[in-house]
Amino acid sequence: MACTTILVGKKASYDGSTMIARNDDSGSGHFTAKKFVTVRPEELPAVYKSVLSHVEIELPKNPMRFTAVPNAVKGEGVWAASGVNEANVGMTATETITSNPRVLGADPLVRYRPARDGQPEIPGGIGEEDIVFIVLPYIHSAREGVERLGGLLEKYGTYESNGIA
Image (cartoon, rainbow, N blue to C red):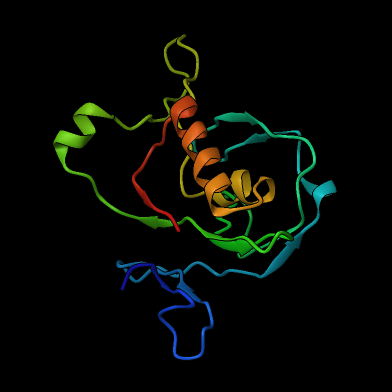
C-alpha cells in the first residue's frame, strides 16, 4: 500500500471533531524510518537547499514553530511528510501521484541535471522532500498555504507530481 491520507472535517464526523490520519510507506515494500520532531524558528535556514534537486529557495523571515515527521536517517532529504504549525494549520505533502502525458506536455516536470562535460549543474524543481518544510512554517491558514505553494511551484516547478492536503 502506498502513502495514504484520510481527512475528516467537523461536519463529517459524529462528534464534530476534525481528524487527520496519515501513513508513509511504499508500494514496493520499502520502509523508511521516521521520527517526530518540533522545529523551532531559529533552526530554519535563511536559504533552503533541496538535497535531491539542489534547488535553493530563499525563505521568508519570521517562521513559526511546527511539528514534522521527517526521515530518521539523514542523507536522502528532509521528507517532512506532515505536520502542524503554531497557528494550528496542518499539512501533508508527500503522496506521489501520476499525471497523464497530455498534462505533462503542457506542464513538464523540472528535473535536476548534474554538471557534466563542462556544463553547469541545473537544479530541479521542488518535490515531496521539500514541501512541508518550505510552506508550513510560513502560513496562518490553508488559503495562505495554497497561495504560498502555488507561488513556489510557479517559480521553481516540481520534479514530480504530488498529492497535498
